[in-house]
Length: 86
Image (cartoon, rainbow, N blue to C red; front, side):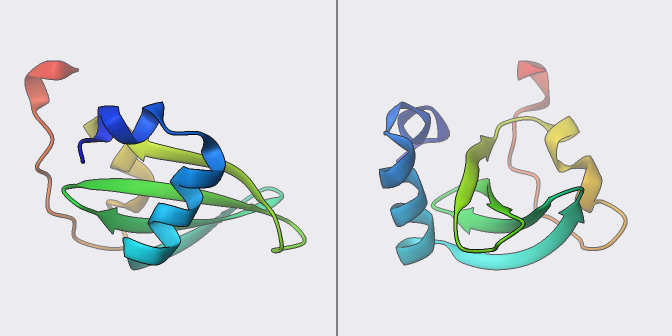
């Protein structure tokens, strides 16, 4: 599955796919969210958990280098993203 195919799925199926098949890498806190970073197939995905940590507010496949910037200082990531797409 590509990031583009993943983005076409409904949010509840995206979240289920990440939680079942993804590999947890790291988390960060931003305002009212805990954001978990996962590796799924050949791309990165963020799950944004709301403050209560029981509900997911956002699921997004990261498709460019800029999206990975918040993680660059804390972990090393394999960047398989095509720079020319930016």
